[in-house]
Amino acid sequence: MATASIKKWWKNAIVYQIYPRSFCDSNGDGIGDIPGIISKLHYLKELGVDVIWLSPIYPSPGYDNGYDISDYKGVNPEFGTMEDMERLISRAKRMGIKIILDLAINHTSDEHEWFKKAVAGDPKYREYYYFKTQSGNKKPNNWHSFFGGPAWSKAENGDYYLHLFSNKQPDLNWHNPDVYNEIADIMRFWLDKGIAGFRCDLVNIIYKDTLDNGKRRLSLTGKEHYLNTEGCHELLKRFYKDVWSNYKSFIIGEAVMVSPEDAKLLCDEDRNELNTLFFFEHMDVDARWNKWVKRQYKPYKLVKVLDKWQNALETPSNYLENHDNIRSVNHFGNTKEYWEKSAKLLCGLNLSLRGIPFIYEGEEIGMTNGDFRGLRDIRDIESYSINQSLKKMFLGHSLRRKIILRTSRDNARTPVQWDSSENAGFTEGSPWLKINENKSYINVKRELEDENSILSFYKKMIDFRKNSKGLSEGTYRRVASPNDVYIFTRESQEERLYIYCNLSSYNKNVEFYGDRIIFGNYDEDEQILNCLKPYEYRIVASNI
Ligand code: ISL
Ligand code: CA
Image (cartoon, rainbow, N blue to C red; front, top):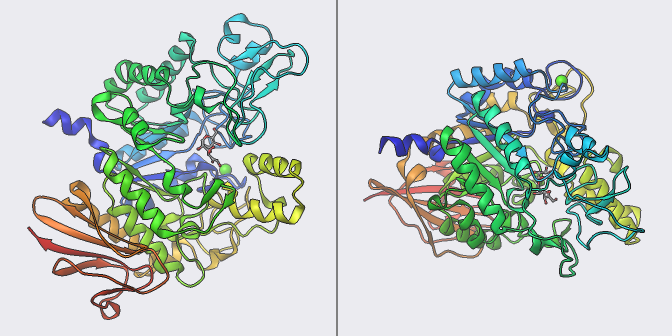
């Protein structure tokens, strides 16, 4: 029993994602860094964070902000030194906070030594990637890249290489046992330094079973040859046996395009692969055929998808926001009339679901999408690629601008707003990405001082969850409810909690269960029996 609880230390954790570039800058170069993170550890501790997930901190030419890694055993000098990293790990440990790292192992940077040696003709390293010699300009197959355009480019040696993301991110060849050994060694290197686990980027697409042509599709032609392959499951089982289980590490996979059935095969406990994973279906409820072409967001669809995943996974990872999507209050809330209420509702929802809650930096103060003036303010490589693809489709500038400003990943990457000063307390220099003007109101300093702020609500909610067996360990069951209202129970041996979430901007009549309201985002005098106000969140309890 004891071993089991040690093994699963992460099951009740509150995880906070830091995108280091945008978190806090300590030396005035406009780029967030590790000393900056260290300076905010007490803030995170006060918030109630148990685990920090750091987006990549390794050396990288930065075309994809660190998801193009050029040295897996180093620290990007823009972020600090290895000593800084060691200091972060040990300081956090002393405060009872664990650190997990992001590991992008589907691809490296094209500036990684392995790729450079491969292009220079070293036969050992050529086998680390997928190179193909072709006559003429015919690509080796018809696969698409995730960022738009073909998945093959020519290297300096004249050969084609595979890249499912940008041409600065060549895919690793996981058929080669040397690649497995290198990555296992890298994981041990960091685990020995005291990190607690990894968020494995794109983990369900690393193993390509063949390089045959794919069935032609509008986007991502080729995907049937690399999504959730048997080879991928074998690799994960090996990592689990050789590395992860020896360190009792916490391993989250980022799994793209998975159904609950695929996901269970990747993270059910008896499979000995991942501990949990990020799925995307709820983030795409407003996507038409991809996330750049949106349809109107319908809350009842979000409810349906969340409910499906709550029932499917042993330990779901719950999140409403990350560095690849727009801000949740823009996505699922109402920034015009109900910014504060809807941000609190989303907090309540995320922290009431069964599983592990993830909070993305700035979400806890209700940060909104960037207020970019035009495409010139955008830095994201994905937005650039999409712009190119849209140009090829003859879309005019103003339409492209509209699509990109609305969906760009940079919306969630603007610097964290610590105070209302010119650069929001993020930097003393000039920030790498435009800071939102609403920093004058939406900022940590003001919200720390206001007991009714979104930040204060997060603190109370985290505290509530930690002290509630129902929320942290209880079962989950959805209760029938009107459209756009999500009602579910969380039940432990002692208590049954009814969670009410009105995800709409309208009053909703509902049937109430339970006998005492114990938590919510409306004051007592505003609460009405049998009616939920716009974006109202309520917990009603009953003893068992
Ligand atoms: O953001 C996406 C599309 O707009 C996703 O498809 C995303 O690219 C996918 O989830 C993989 O994301 C991860 O790997 C990418 C990197 O750009 C993302 O930031 C990272 O989270 C490539 O390394
Ligand atoms: Ca800096």
